[in-house]
Image (tube, rainbow, N blue to C red):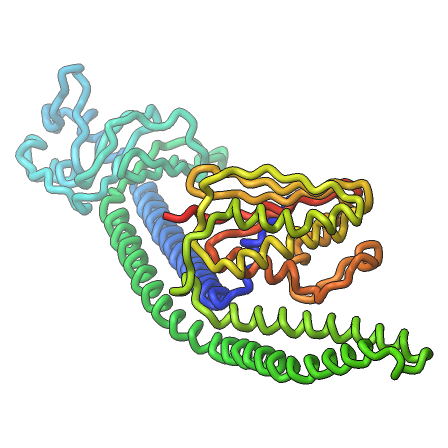
Length: 466
């Protein structure tokens, strides 16, 4: 399993990252709410306007169907009575051409339909067509008509259809027989209306909602910057106070601990002055004070690094291969005493910019950690590679390994694993936290791979010096 320390930032940059994450999250939530609201408004308005249009078509169709019987009667007079012969124009197929309502009713004052204005009674974006029972168009009115035949299957309640930007509703009309009391088909009525105006209205609505979302999102972003800044103020203040307390406490504890260690050293240098029964107690006190001093030094180092800004003026170009080779030489004897094989594979010309002391501390902590958790007969391998614009330092051991559920926490300060691993602990519990902080301050990171019972591999990635 692999764990990358980039996922757990601890430096002062965490507040900038936290602020940016909170601002981004706030902005995304606001945008999502606004978009949801705008979409809901658009869908509701669209549905409502379409329902209004459909209801209007049905209403016009119902009223027009009520006049079909009268219109058919008047039209039959034109085609059956001799006195109206020639009133209705005939098409090339020899069949009468559909006429308007004005022309139909003008038969009483004109000899030909052509003498009557064909001005429609309906609006130019609407149209009404009356068909006989044989589905032949006889009369129409308005300025918009479909150049298509009636649908083959028209239910009793009518049928809505959309053709391009024209909506139509076709409805059959029935006549009730006085003898059988059963309805018979009388004809059909088709009402059409253009949706151009409706679509233009919806486009304006979409544009208005889009602009509104952008404007509201911009205002929300500005408000979010201020709100996030104000929300993080107490957090940043508490964090700074905690860092200051850690630094002050660590600094104040150094002198008493130094005095205790000096006093114990003096007493141990004159064993004749110490009662034999107190010898073991002095050893325990010396060990505890040394561990406490190490803890204080580590806390002070972390506090100082938290306050400092990366890329300090004191940084310089460091030959990483020389630093690591000196480190291997220093730990060679310790590894031999523990019967651990310490191997290394280094390359030359691997220079990085940074603080020599901090980088030395980084790899010291990792190498100490590897030797500490590797049993006798095991192997610790240190390797240095150069890939692209980065160098990779890998410290691999054949130790006890780390459980997968513990990997996310091993770089936390003072974190301790289970008892199987705790039995090896003798440090301050800050070694890996310090290593991670140093790596991040040098624009790098630490990646961990580990398997229980097989060992661990810590890989430090650092940018090459420019």
